[in-house]
Length: 181
Image (cartoon, rainbow, N blue to C red; front, side, top):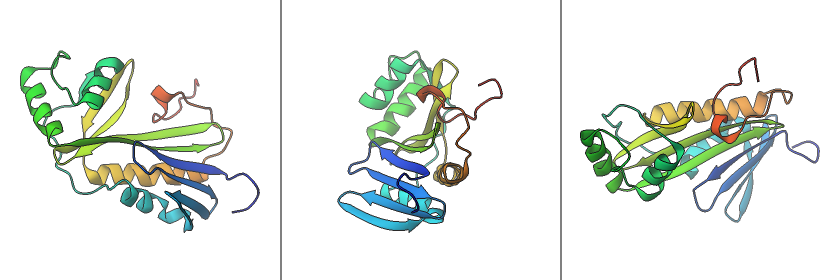
């Protein structure tokens, strides 16, 4: 890397040990657990997918679920699908899936004031993308392929985004900035 400060950072949250990548152009350094190793920027997304243990997962067959942040935190953190006003069939199906074991993790990327997140809940019962939906939080069934594509785009954008782009708050961190921001 050139200079004292990296141009961008990408890191994991919810996975132990965490991994952090600091990069500048085509060169990065990945700190994963006690190890620190050089890595090409173009390989960061694959390295992070491996680090979080992303693998084939079934795509849940229910529609996207939208809840207020508090109930969604209970659903994700405590694996409790009931009691949030969901249709009974949806709550039962979701509960069966999260009972198989589900992990919640985020890969965040930042370059200057620009920041985005890729937040996922996944396990043997399925894979979901977690993202803001206005004042609510959406838990949307997805595929591993879609998550990998988003991860590749996240890293590529972090590595090449102009630092003059506006900062985004945590609830909008994975949404594109609008012209009014």
